Structures are given as C-alpha cells and as structure tokens.
Length: 595
Image (cartoon, rainbow, N blue to C red; front, side):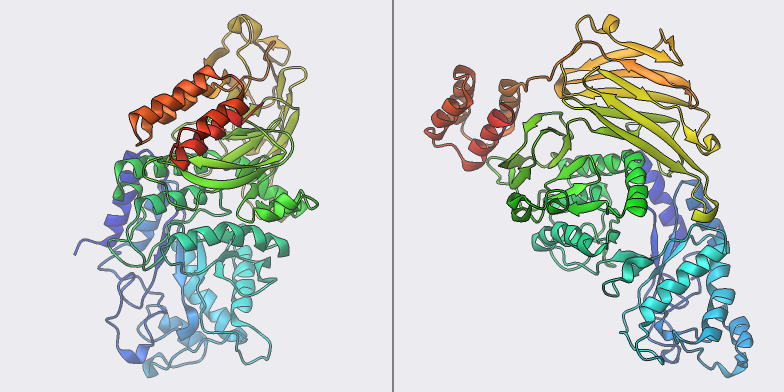
C-alpha cells in the first residue's frame, strides 16, 4: 500500500494544478491504524480513540506535517478521547509511569474530565509532543454525553476549556474545534454542527441555523460543507453548498470515509468544477475582509454572520427572510438553496434588500433597495450583494495560493453611490497579550470621487514594507478622458506609473499603483463620473442565449425588452408571452433591478 502521507501530499499540488487554494487537512485517527478502521484487539477499546500514527500510512509523521506547513497549510487531528490511553499506544509507557501505573500490566489509563493527574499526563506525554511534531490544533469530537464524576461538569466543556488553556501555555494563539455543548459553550471553540446528510433540505437549513445562532453570540460555526453522509451524487447541490461555504464563518469541506463522497472540485463535472473553484478562490481572496470582520466580532460582539433583523429590528421583511444574512458590515447574502429549473437554467431565491443602493458582488449589477424581490441565479452565480459606499479589501492575486500571510498585494473595491470607510486589521497571529497590530485606514468619498489608502498605523513590522495597491470603483461610469482624469498621489507626489483600465462588463474602473511603502499616504482621484446604468438589453440577451427554451420565445422576449423602454410596460407585455416562469422571472429581475 502506498503511504497515505504521500497520497495527501499529492493532493495539494493537484489543487495547485486546478488553480484553487487547498484547505487545511483534517486527519481522523484510529489506534495503530491512523485513518484505517479496526485491526486492534478488543481489549484496547472501541477503536475511536487513538494517538499513534500508523507507520505504514505515515512513515515519517514530522516530515509529513512539515511538508504540509511548507505548502501553507495547517493540520488538525480529530480526537475522540473517551477510551483514554491504552497499552498499544506509543506514548503509553511514559504516560503510565507518570500516573504510577506499571506499563507491563497494560492497565487502561481511563479518561475522566475531572481528573487533573490524567489530564496533566495526557497533555505532557501525548498531545503536546504531537503538537511539537507539527499538529497545529485539535478537533475535540466528544460524543459520550454530559456525565462526569463531578455533578454538573460536562466533559466537553472541560475539554474545551483545558485545550484552550494548554494551547495558550505553549505561546501560540489558541484555537480549538469542537462539537456543540449547549448555549454558552462557544466561549472557547469554533463549533462543529454535526454530521450532515447530503440533501437539499440540509443545505437549506444551514443559513438560518448559522444566522440564528448569532442571537446568543454563537458566531463561529463550521459546517460539513457539501454534506457528510448518505444522499446521492449531485453536482449542483455540491456546488451550491460550496458557494454557501464562501459566506460561512468557517469554510470546511468534509465527508465520511467513502471513496465516492469526496469534495475536491475536480471530482465533479466541468461546470460544477469551475463554479466550485471560483467559490474557493473568492473565499480565499476575501481573507483581508474576513480577518477585519473577525476582529470586529471580537472587539464589538458582531458575529461575522448575522440575521437581517440585527441591523433592521423594526423591518418586518427582515423576519420574513430567515435564510438571508449579513456577512460582515458590507455584504448581504441570499444563498441559493433550491435546484435549478433545467429549461430556464436558474434557481429562484426570494430576498429583501434594505434601503439604499446595492451591487451584485460578481457583476456589479445595480439594485435599488427598500424592497423585496425574487432573484434568479445560474449555477455559476451567487446571491451576494454589496452596499453602496462599501470599501471591500481582497487579496490582490486573482488566483490565490495557500496560507494566510499578510499580503504584499491588495485589491480595494469601492462601491459607487455613497461614502464609506474601513480600517484594515492585521496582526502577527500571536496571543492577544503579546500581539502586534497594524491598522490601515481605507476611505472612499463618493462626493469627492477620491480614495485614501493608509498610511499604516500601529506596528508596521507586522505587514510587508511595500505593497501593490489595486483600487476599483464599482458601479460608476468611466471618467471622461479616463487616463487624464484619474490622478494618483503618494505622499503628495503624483505617480506617473499608475495604470488605469476599464472593465465595462462589471462597470468598474481599475487603478493599479505598484510598489508603495506602507508608511505612505495614497490618494486616488477618480475624476468626474456618475452611477452607471445597467446594460439591460445586453444582460437579457446573454441570459436568453444560454436558456434552454424555444427560440421563438427568446426572440419575442428580446424584442419586447428592446422596443419598450418603460420597465413596467415591458413586464406587462412579457407576461402575455407565456414564457417559462424562470425565464420571465430572470428577465423581470434584470429589467427592474434599478430605476
């Protein structure tokens, strides 16, 4: 058998070959057999607890872990601690001796959450040595109930608290991953919501579940993206789940041990693969925004995912859309959780846009808010909207690699129609008591058509000395005499090497300013421009071109859109054409998005 360590190490280059970031690997252990089930004498327990690498699968564990770290990945081990430490474990002799047990007796070292001597020996002789070999954090998968020797002490609460304190004692910023232990248990871990069934019903449940959990402050959830078990192979379902993962607190693709139920994008058809890769890239590119919103959650108590009624408590519409949620301060998500109609090639999602102007995150399509609407999305399209005035930071590389180092290149998207600002948060990933922090102010004035970047504040050693900036003005017309209208000043000195480009498809003007010291103040003057009109005819034609419906229906719908300029009258005429409901809905959405 080929060592599993070699197989897993191949998967990261495979992800690189598909130009998508790899996710941090989770390894699930069994005694003596690593990821393999069974094969141990029954006297050594159920088989769910195990702390010894299977050398036939992992001949050199420290080297394997180091190789993953070199690829920008971090590793967690899934731990079922209930069976304690048995005599077959490599660490048994030293742990037994620490507890005064003769190793020759093979006496089980029994787990007990209230036993300080057991816990001390477990960390000193089993867990901390594995961390020194390269294990980054633990997934605590306790499933044996809330009983312990001390009445009222839930072992899972005790394990979570102890793991967090032990990890902090090693000088690292502590992070653990654990099953749900009831309200209040989110004080220490990222929560695992359980093994989900692969079904549309499971997918539809997760957005509301995640947003509602924020009502008690439980903001950091990690779901089995794609579903864990049972169900059937469904490329569309897997893709919609991957897209929800992009806008989840933690994006963790997971599955049971079944060779047919794995989540790599290249295991699906070409269209699903492209959409899933795009979702993974977008998630990774959003890291600057995500980290800033994570600090906001810590400092201000705003979870990354919140129900709409947190910001709009008096709006009845906010309560009618439980699956819609705010993703940080700038993005609103109405996820697609139902299948596509094969003829219209779109899935319908009912949404509410609060007052103001909104833009489709992918296309820059403009929407008027203050209303409920039905959105229609093809497989590659997201239900994600950005508010006017938002300042959205992303990684500068359109095809990001692995890792979470503070970037040398940043893309700053500014959404037309209102003023806005965001202070980019970055740190050195040290424990809070010792962390070094850098904050970079990012300010967008729609009134003045200017963007201000920096200078960095705080400890500048946390970030690279120089950065490439890419500023995008989304949803505005191109400035007249574009190259002359746009000016870039760095510490008051004009930069002649700034590059200005225009992408009409997403109504965005881009300004690239390379190699700028982070200590410098950058001002981008965008010149005269206005809110851009949506190209309704062009978008309707592009959609109808792909729809799987009769040619005559397409022609009639297109003729109506082109000949009747008033959207209301056009809708009346379209309603007489007996179009497929999805086709009529998508065309109507494009027609009426913005007045």
